[in-house]
Length: 266
Image (cartoon, rainbow, N blue to C red; front, side):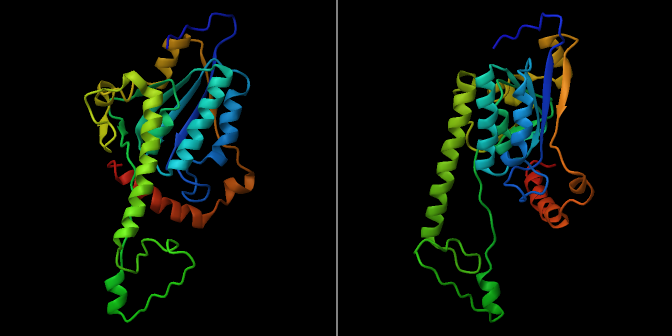
């Protein structure tokens, strides 16, 4: 896409939406990313037909559903209003974080940014031997043969693993379709980009997952002129929310959030 700097007397305006943190349903990651919270922010950004919209992304991923919902909302508004969208990656845009980046028309990285991880993961623990040694009996009653799956207090069953893999494969196919639809011919044809690998900086550019290494302000000035106005967009919180917050959600959210970030050494 070729961008022509804004030529009228009015300075071009570019709302900047920060997508920071793990992605999950409201409450799961405390202050993380979800469509319910971000929806009003995204809608405001596109409301008055800005010159463009910029996404600043720093996310290790999370929920596939929330990634899809957020990205779809951005694309719907961008297409309806014919507004270009530019993504700028900071530390990481991996897994669901990269899904968000694909909502943009182009993706820009820092030389040290980590991106990719186009895959799906499910992880947990198993404790059947532990409870047996301590004389604990697990009692589970269901109506429906598939209602109980991968119970951590029972030995793993082959049929449960098969069902889980079918779910993961379906989500992976959807992720691959998103990346292919948005990046198209820019993707390297001689590499398997969907095996969960990650790339750093220029490596991601070389395989087509990003368009170049550039930073927010200089890149937007190059595209829209030195007078471009960047408008930070954020989630509006009540005074009570800002003062109190939810301690339980913050504690639990931090534990899950740190587990996601640690996959990328952050």
